[in-house]
Each structure stands twice: as structure tokens, then as C-alpha cells.
Length: 207
Image: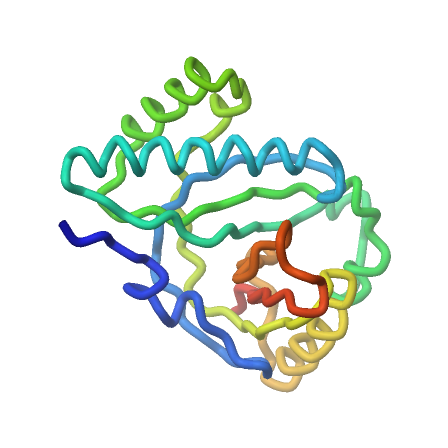
């Protein structure tokens, strides 16, 4: 039985250069869970646990049905209340909006054959067998970003602003405006990788 590896099947989706570029992103579906607050806090880690537990439970149940797949990279969309925190640029936003008021949607890309019923069944199994009640918040999420500016960020999350400045300059030079939520793809496991070696794709939908 062949195991579907989405990072290989959609290589362009999981690849970025060390300079800003425009890329067209295909529609995709994800396991998702939403939250709010500083990612260094416990709630963020608990949401990751619920998401991954559901993903692996579903993987093993489908493997028995000859539909095996590898669990993909963690991703996140980030936003804030723009009526309360007004900002004129991406870099100003990163500097001025407190981390504890950011909202997020954590994501793990899923194969196209995954259904909402299968996700719900996996989440119920996680709740029953592992007692992870947050699994009930894991949902199917469909995303269509389309045209985006992206860049590979290497190093600590605290220095993402340096990469965002380059992306913002590129967008301004090419008359591209923001058209969606800030999106990050965590190519490295930030629980196990030293900060200076972290690799993260930063992506901004544009028009």
C-alpha cells in the first residue's frame, strides 16, 4: 500500500525561497482548530495536541482501509481585531499588536478524500480514549488563498519582522495589496529545533 505524502505531492505548496515571490496557491482542505492568545502559553500547546491527536487517529483508522497518508506540517493563520488595533503596515502590526490579542487558526493539510464525518469520528475517538476534550473543536476547514506573496524565514519567530519588511517592500513595489489572513507554515518542529535553525514559510494573500 502506498502512503500519500502531501509534502511531496504538493511540493510547491511547502517550498519557498529566501526572497519574496508571487505564487498561486491551489484550494485545499485542512484539519483546523481556532484559538486566541500568546503562542507561548499553555492553551496554544493544548490546541496543537488536540489537532495532532485527531490527525493521527484518523490516519490510523484510514490506514486500515488502505487509504494511508502522512500527517503534514503544522500551519497557522493569524489575525486580530482591526477595529480596535489600527495599523498601516504589516511590520507595524507585528510590532504594535500585543501577542495575547492575536487570534489564530492552526491547520494540518488533509488529503482530498477526507470527509467531515471521518474527522468527527476521529475527534470523538480522541475524546473517548485520550480524554482530550478540545478535540471536539477540531473541524474541517477549506481554504482558497489564490495569489500570494511568500518568503522563507530562517531563524527565531521574534525576527520574523525582518522577513516581513522585505515582503512588504516587494508588495509595495509591485502594487500588491493585502487580500487575506497572514499565513505561516512551520517546516521545522519548533518544539525540537533550535531557534536559529527554524524554517517557516511566511505567506500573504494579495490582489
